[in-house]
Image (cartoon, rainbow, N blue to C red; front, side, top):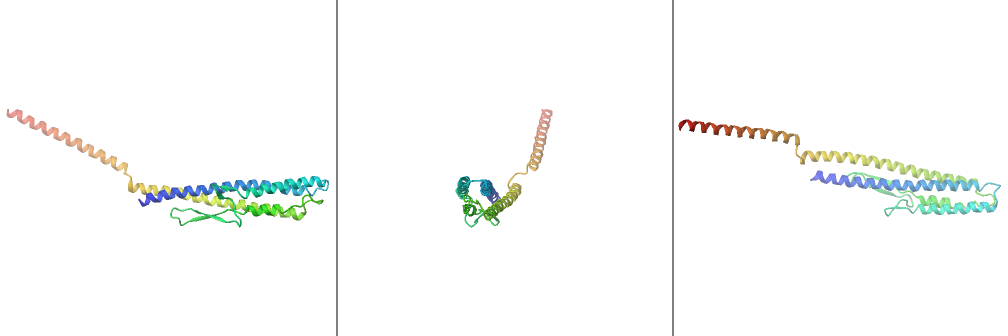
Length: 222
């Protein structure tokens, strides 16, 4: 019974770990989109420094830049089954990775909102000179921060994948141990059945022979 309970807990833990991996995959998908947005924002900042562009042109750059900043902020509020993919201050979620509840892995939610705020703070594209070198450097730093978030996400996925593999191995071993206790040894029982059938047939044949001998003696006496 204890082994059966361990098997069921292992299966439940596997499901939980796989769900956590799905959360991280969804988070990485959002970060991938955020990466595309930041790259375009960085491109707009660079374009705004073009001396051949008029103030009207640069104002259009600023309009697109601001719109992309809003899109980035919206991404920071994405959910997975009602759970925040991102959190202020880069909080963590604890994922139990063993059926006894002792082992766990902390996965990072990351602070995409802070990245969005830093990017939105650059509002100098529509000026005569456009974005400054400082603004471009700031955007480069922001992109680097996002890259680090994606690297952390990948590391968390890798660790949970190994945990899921270990749970699968443990489940197989637990099922084997449980089978040795609860299940019939088919080979042994088949051999015993064959032996008992042979003994039964031999006994029946001997009894039939004995009956025939008695009948022969009675015929002689008559």
